[in-house]
Amino acid sequence: MLTNKETIFALSSGAVPAGLAVVRMSGEDTPVVLASLVGELPRPRQAALRSIRTRNGLVIDTGLVLFFPAPHSFTGEHVAELHLHGGRAVVDALHRELAEFENMRPATPGEFSRRAFENGKLDLIEIEGLADLIAAETEMQRRLAVEQSSGGLSSIYYGWSERLTRARALIEAELDFPDEEDVPGSVSDQVWTDVARLIEEMASHLEQLEAGEIIRDGFKIVIAGRPNAGKSSLMNALAKRDVAIVTDIAGTTRDVLQVDLNMDGYLVKLYDTAGLRNTDEIVEREGIRRAEKTIAEADLLIYIEDLSVDTAIDENLNGAVLVGTKCDLPRRSVREYDLVISTADGTGLDMLRALIVQRLKAKVHPHSMAIPSRARHRDSLTKSLMALQASLCAPNRGLDLRAEDLRAAGEALGRVTGRVDVENLLDVVFGEFCIGK
Image 1 (tube, rainbow, N blue to C red):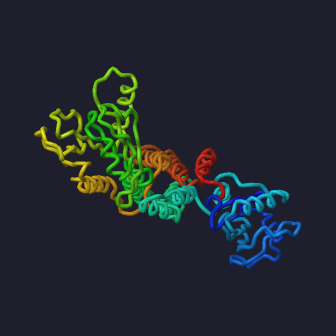
Image 2 (image 1 turned 90 degrees about the horizontal axis):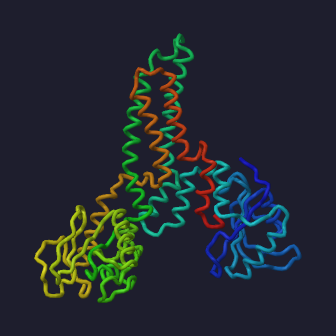
Image 3 (image 1 turned 180 degrees about the vertical axis):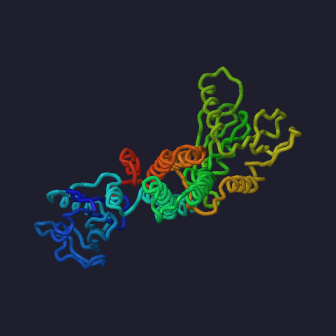
């Protein structure tokens, strides 16, 4: 366990005022500071009701106190929690008192979790899962975050690492002790067959990355079409509130508007875009440029047309959902659409929602939640996979060179969990946390 010279403290619960405030401490001086505040320390991991006082004996508040001795705590250090009434003055008074102690200071964002990582309590994937769990807004985000924060994904990578370590050990044994009887004469059957299986497993695992990214970051749906086709009205109808301004004036929407929806437990990011047409108006032309960029990044494009106007569907809409709008008005268009809707009377909106969920689940069908979900995971896993493939693609290369490929594969894999050469990543990862976690 690492030893940090300074003891840190922070409000770990939500912003005050609130019904309850939890102030957390972690570090070597925690027992001394806690005893100064509450007198006799409570039994480890058992809540006790205490008066919390300044060193002058003034009562700050009365609340529950918990003490977690090292190393059996979240950070691996001595940790204490003070459960107080959630008034701003109460919390401020406690913070002022804690700051008066020597070697005590406020925690920076993510510092408790960083100490847990540095003390071997959590690996980097579990830390990221914890951050995602705090930020989760949908059921599927929660399930993905729980799987990662509880070590489900890490266990896969540790299993792969153990297999790579064994493969390297067999190769090194053959290179260093070729004449020993207890060293296999050929590692081909034992090592390279398993490496081939590992390549298949890793490649299959990486195929789940898109599903993980959609669950974590959201399914991006873009509503596009010509001016006055009803894009903004459709966005408002799906969001069930007024997000976009709706008028009869063509070109009302000049920028990309976005709203988050929860559909069947999934995060859906819905975008409304400027109407697509040729124009010399500078601001509208910029809006159209942004619309085209957003369309190119969409997971699903909903292209809509006004059924009361006979206009041609734009080309290059393969994979888009073609929707005819304003079906409550006299119809002039004779083309076929995937759906016809009316935002005025609600016709077809439930069918459109069902179609969106169907398209989403067609892209997101993981066998389990132990899947990668970040670009960082993809980059390191891809490097590991490429090194493994290099070790197999040229069997006539020397064993020492192929062993080096396996070492590179193991090192790249270790970066995912944070156990190898990730110092430059830590500030980025822990910067995602709020103060007090």
